Each structure stands twice: as C-alpha cells, then as structure tokens.
Image (cartoon, rainbow, N blue to C red; front, side, top):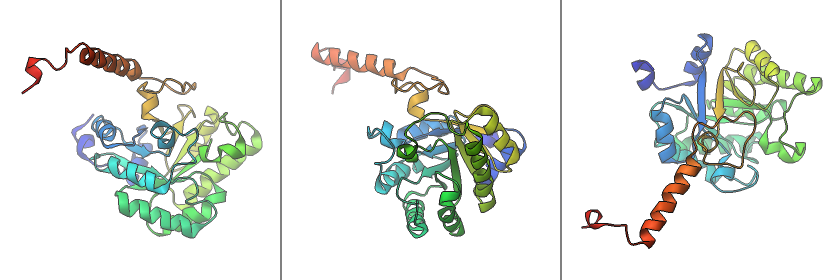
Length: 271
C-alpha cells in the first residue's frame, strides 16, 4: 500500500478513479467504533454501516426491524473511528420507500447526526423518486440491486436473483437509471457473475459485488461473517479469513476457568 493511499481520504470521486484504472475496491461492514477502527486502519476503502446490524448486532431474523434511530447510533459510532475510508450508511426499511419527502427527511437526519459520507438504498425504478430527491439535497447515494434483503417478504427467498431473462433485463435497466440519476456506485447482490460483469462493463460508476462474481469493480462482505464470528451463515460467496468464534470461545472459557479456580487475578494483576 502506498503512503498516499494510507492518508488520502477515500471519496466518491476516488472510487470512480479507482474503477477507471482497474483498481479493485474493498468494502466491509462495521457497526461499532472498535471494529470500524480496525477495518479502517487495515486499508478498507469503504465501510458500510449495513442494516445487517439487525441480524449480527441485534439478533433479528431479517433486516426489516432495525429503526432509523438504531442506524444513526451505529453509524455515529463508526464515523468516530474512521480516518480514511468512505462511510456509507444503509437507509433502513420504511424510511424511503413510497414517500420521497420522508426519504429526504430520513436522509438528512442520518447525514446531520452521524457525519457519514453517503447513503445506500435498495431498489431501482420503484424508488427513483426518493433517490432523485435525496440527490438534489447534495447527499451521495449508492444503489443496491439484485437480492434486496428489505424485500425478503416479497420474494420469499434469499436465492440468487435475476437468473431469468426478464428480471435480468430489468436489473440492467435499473442500473442505468440509478447511474443516470447520479448515484456514485451500485451494489450488486447475489446475481449471476456474467450479468454482474455485463453491468460493470456498461456503467461508468463502480459496482460492488456480494455473491456477484469477480467481474465487479469491488467486493463487500459482512465483517462478522468473514472473520468467522458467525458460524451459522455459510453461502457459497463467503470466504472466512479467520475463525474468531473458536478463538473467542476458547479465550472466554479459559477466563471463566481461571476465575473459578481463583487463578485470576494473581499477585501481579492487583494493586
């Protein structure tokens, strides 16, 4: 990593520059100060404060229950930790669908109360009015197409999206609509790799893939998944870079044993 990349803050413009020179974009989720500080110091380009906090932080089955106040809390914690990465915040379910005035009010609250750099919204043509209204306020927007977890009850499954020709054509059309509206990037989740590569080639703005193959301009994973803190979730696209679940379970178990055996604290660990 160059000295410049260590100190130069990542911006939406810089992501476009990275795409133009073929440099891949590394994006991870974070939801708290400590984890975000480590991710930022490790060279992650974009930190997503995902509504997946509903799952990994709050224990909900879907992303739908997380509230605007909860997202603001998590995003504020992350922003305080970050020096370099671009911080993008998911707008939670119910804060932008169907009412562009509510969408703008929600977006302004997130930006003012967290200090984040940008927002992410799920959907294409259906939410374009809200996207346009948020963009007119000068707030950067990242799109999200393919598998959209906030619509889980509509689709009834987390299976790969856009395998059929009609849905694939709509996804391509939606990607262009989001780019034309002024979005700075688009996340593509769990779609065929060939389709994701096509979208990435056609768009000027960068694409960030999750379960969408190597043809995207960048990749994103949930940090708890890739660190092996969560063991229940094992989709094909997930690569685990550590097994923190085992490490943490062992460490906590040894701590409990030492306390029970009166081996902690010892004489050197007290005043």
